[in-house]
Length: 186
Image (tube, rainbow, N blue to C red; front, top):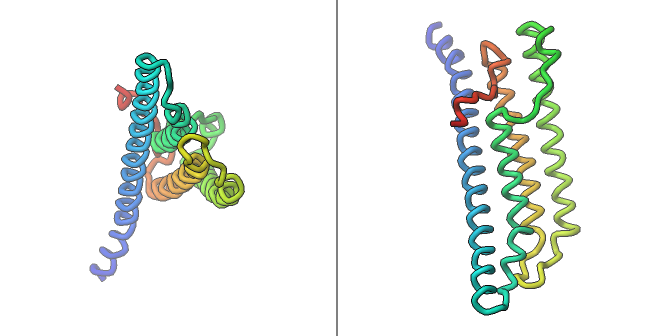
């Protein structure tokens, strides 16, 4: 009886640990994408400025980099904000609900959020198929790379909603899940 009880008790901890690991992976990937995008955009535009100043001619390709990389920067920031609970939230109803009511409300929200963003990612594949063949004139890179940022961001938001669903299910206080802590910003 004790062995069965310990297995059942360990299951939520294992699920919570997996959700936490997935959250940390999403944060690391989002930070890496954001930093890489910023550095690549800055470096390419700086190279364009230096070459233009030195030769009165541009390289051409650096002007296309923001079009390709800015969507990646934005979507990585959106996923990071979702992971840290920094999106705008309306919490007026939460004050009237008890712990159970808030849990039900927040669980329902996460199911809706996950379904919406996974659906948007699915539809985004059609957009990529239609418009992704367009090429940037100088680099020859297809617009698919820019549009894939939306799909990656939508998947990241859907996964964040699923991990939040796990955290909400297991948390003692559902209002404490994904709560923004100002002291982490310093």
